[in-house]
Length: 181
Image: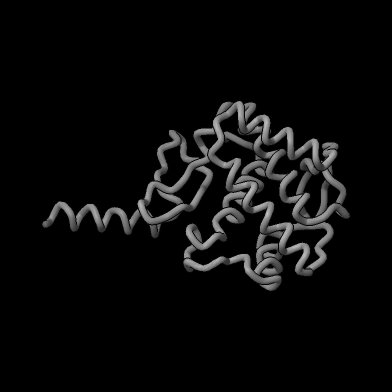
């Protein structure tokens, strides 16, 4: 195991949120354009705590998505600085919690904090583990030439190249066609 379960979940959520932009989404559309889409994402990822369900919250989450896409590929030292900035801005104070059937894990904000702030802080807390383990190479960008998706490479030897099987298959088919012609 490279990271704890809650770190993996936070990193995977971070990638899923980042991949809702049109250039990375499976649909090719902005998959976080409406409050209903945000509601679906919150339900699917079982996000607890405050959820206002209004346009202001959607705008804040979209801004958080942009920020997380920016920090995803930063070199380790710059990533550490970006993580510290996020934690400082939120006045994050880590504490252990247990809720909704999940065992003890770390939260660093109040459940009443705005959703976007909680998303940023949870991502930052997971990135703390990535930086401490010197595993930034596991925060990857898809190698497909027509995809800007991001993903967490949890493979044993950090050799995964594509964000999804779909991208891997598409690139393999292109390579096959190129060899055949």
